[in-house]
Amino acid sequence: MAKIRTFVCRRHDILILVAVAVSVLLPYLFARQIYNQDDFLFHKNRLLMFYQAVATHFDFHPMVFDTMARGYGYAADLFYPSLWTLPFVIFYYFGFGFIASYYGLLLVYVIATAVISYYCGLSFFKKRQQALFAAVLYTTSSYYAIDLFVRGALGEAMVYSFVPLFFLGFYRLVTNQKYGVLITGIALGTIANIHFLSVYMIVGIVIIFNLLLLIQRKYSLRFLYRQTAAYSLAVILSASVILPILEQMIHGSYRFMGEDRMAPQGLTYLLGSLISNSFSNNAGVWQNLAPNIGPILVITLIYAGLRFGRMAAKTRQLFLIASSFFVLSSNLLFWSFADKTPLAKIQFEWRLLTFATLFAVILLTMLVGKTKYQVGLMVLSVLLTMTFNFRTLTNFQNMGIHATTDQQFSSYGNEIIGGGEEFVPNGINYDKPPKHFQTRQITAGKTIIIPTEMGDTIYQSYHFPKATTVIFPKYYYYGYRVTLSSGQRAKVFSHQGYAAARIPKGQGTYLLAYEKTPLQNFSILLASFAWLLTAFGILLIIKHRIFKSFRN
Image (cartoon, rainbow, N blue to C red; front, side, top):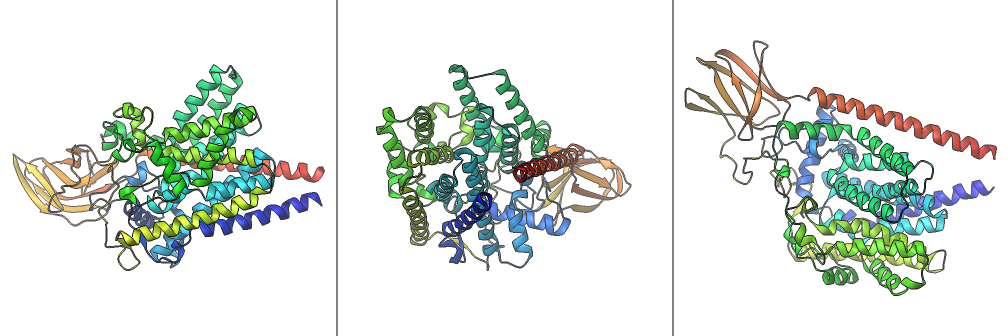
C-alpha cells in the first residue's frame, strides 16, 4: 500500500508541475505574437531551417543551412545543433502555426525543467514535498523567464533544464554514490548537444570545485577516476558536436575563434542593480535588460547571510556557493580584468545566474524543510512569475517593440544570424553583403560575374579555355563539394571566406553542394550508438530496481 500511495502522490505532483509550467507561459499563450528581442529572430530562422531539413530531407543534423545568412549558407546546426528543437518541428508539421509551435516548444522546455528538477530533488532530498517545493521554485525563477521571453535564448533555456541533473551527478561523484558517472555523463553530454558555451562555463565551475576539494583534502583517486569516466561518456555522447566543430576549426577560421570580449551589457552591470532588480521582479526589455533571481531567492540569500553562524555546515556551504555565483553575476569583482581573456567568452557574467538560482533554491529548500511555509512560498513564486510575465509583456507594448506574427514571420528578419555572427568565416563583413548574389569566374586576370539563384546547391554550365578559379556565393565550410559533369571533383577551398574551386579547362557543368564529411558521418553514428547503449543501460537499471522493489 505504501508503494501505491507513493506512486499516486508522485503522479499528483507531476500534474501540479504541469499546471505550474502552463502558468509560467501566461500570458504569452494568448498573445498570438512574439516580441523580437535579443536572439529570437536568429532562433526563428534556425527553427524554420531545421524544419525544412527534417521535413524535406529527413535530416536531423544537416550541419549547414544552405539558404540561411541571406542565401550564403550558415553552419548554425554544426556549431549549435538543432535536434533539441524537434518539438517545434512536430507541432509545425501537424498544422500548428509558427507562433503556436514556438510556444509549444517553450511549454515542452518548461515541463522538462519542472519534471527533471523534481526527480533530482527526490534523489537529493529523499522527500517528495521538498522535491516538489524545489522544482516549483526553480521552474518559476525570474532568470528562467528572462531567458525564455525577454532574451529568447532557446539554447540556454533548454540547458537550464539539465543543470540540476549535472550537479546531482557531480554530487554523487563527490559522495561516491551509485550512478554518479552515468548521471553526470548524460547531463553533460546532453548540455553539449544543446549549447556548447554552457559546457564551457560548467567546465570552469568543475575545475574550481575540484580545486576546493583538493584544498579541503577531500580528493581521492577514486573520485578522479569516476570523473574521468563521466566526462569520457559525455564526450562520446556529444561526439556528433565535438568532432565536427574541431574539424571545421582545423580547416577554416571563424569569428568565434577571434579575440574574446565581454559585452558592454555585462561590464556595466552593478551588484546594486542586480539586488534591486531582484527585489523589483522586473526584467525590462533587451535595450535595458535587468537580469535577476527574483525577490524570494534574494531574500533567501540575505536571510541566510544573517544566520550564517547558526546554520549547519552543509547549509553554510550552500550559502557560500549560491552567494558567490550571485556576486559573480555582477561586475563587482574581476570581470573588468577578464576582458580579452578566455573567460570573456561567456560575454555576459550574469549568465551565472542560472547557477545562482539553482543553489539558492537548494538553500531555501534546506532552510524551509517541511514547514508550513512551503505551500505559501510555492503559490507566491507562481504569482510572482505570472506578474513578472504580464509586466514584461506590458513593457514590450509600451516601448513599441516589433512583434512577429503568423502573417509575416516568414518575411521579416530572415537575414538575422545572431548578434555575434560567431560562425561567419573570418574576412567577411556580414553587415555589408555584396549587392547581388553572384558567382565570380577569374581567369587570366579577368573576372566574369554570373548572376546566381539562391538555393541549396549551385548548378551552372561552363566553357573555359583555361583552368579557371570559380568563387561561389557561399560561405566556406569544410564539406562543400564541386562535382563536374565528367564525374570528376574539383577541390574546394576558402577564398576570403567564400567557397571556391579550381575548374579545369573545357566545357560542361559543375554542381556545388554541401555533403557531410566522413568524420561528420562517423561522429553521428558514434554518438547514436552511444545513446542507444546508454538507454539500454538505463532500462536495465530500471528493470533491476522494479524487480528488487517487487521482491521486497
